[in-house]
Length: 211
Figure 1 (cartoon, helix red, strand yellow):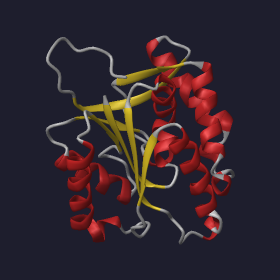
Figure 2 (figure 1 turned 180 degrees about the vertical axis):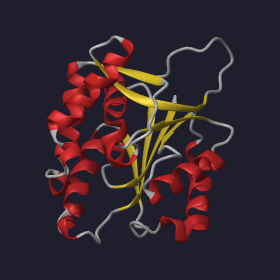
Figure 3 (figure 1 turned 45 degrees about the vertical axis):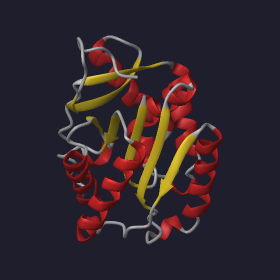
Figure 4 (figure 1 turned 120 degrees about the vertical axis):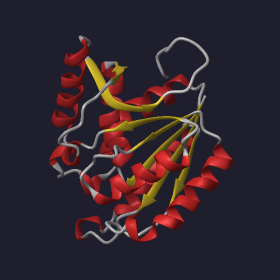
């Protein structure tokens, strides 16, 4: 399966879908592409964010993940909607994903919402699920749950820890990440999970679990 992860900013993918990303990496049977649109170098606390991104890129590429980083202006992706749509169209043609994992359309962060809308538009003939960003998805209602092991939750936390500039953000703290995984697991009677919103699933038979 060819899987495309899409994130507006540094650590969005890891925060919202890091457990699934680590699960797929461990499987070693899927073609994974990681697309991030903004490096967020404009934020004062992010003075060394490029070093963090290099560390994450080294980890991902060492695990056979294709990493694509862009530098659209943080908080102003809406001003570049046409260019972003063109970029996603080119990624669609190059990667030909079977599954796209992107932001949620009701996310209250304007960049996240814009990228969700453009993802839905460009990948309208592809299976798409959306992840939650804890701080900006207050009304998120999961209807698909990825079963995570303790090791996969720990791997997500370790991946987030590579972003040293983001370590003081409360929603990236290990206890918070683990608590959310427990809460989503409780919803479906398993120890740990990540919650997603299904936008579209395309298949040729009965609905089966995704990766």
